[in-house]
Length: 262
Image (tube, rainbow, N blue to C red):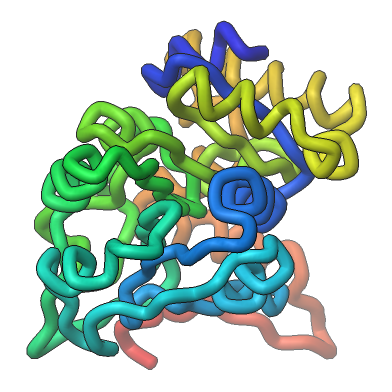
């Protein structure tokens, strides 16, 4: 499992817990308990299941230090708030977009700042893409030109620790994965909380099978989530017509309609 994760992500080491929120919780608990964590106001997100970054920080025993504004945050905003910080956190806005008069620090800028103060930089990537998404996938407008960030890209740019899901764009079972510096992974793995958040053998077996499909280069063909994401509009229309033909009867009329015409 760990060799596969190291090979696929480029990380020094990795750790698996029971979901993505747990991965963030463990990272913040282990690196910043009782101290401040710096986050842009534009990244204080809520995702499915009521997972809210501020609430996870409270559960982890950290103090949230908001920097910047809702729509515009700069590196200088982080720099002005470093005195009591234990780590910097960047949160990927994976399920919504900010458009218009907006600004957010590029990851390499935060990497340079964190290294200058010898602070860990944690990235909550959420979605867990290991490779660029198929061209058929529609993304929010603020990602059109730069694409969905992948775990290997974020680590290669210098993030110390990346948290992401085993399901979603990875295409596997529900799990949370932490990948990054070996010293940080060892530190987190030794915490009592890590045992409370661990996954069972069935999840590990399923996740290993999924990672092997990525390693073999056939994930897009064999993993249902990624296969569905790669379908073209024409292929989806064909599936819709087949379903309509199968469901339709004398008493129920079913038709397949192009969404562009609705």
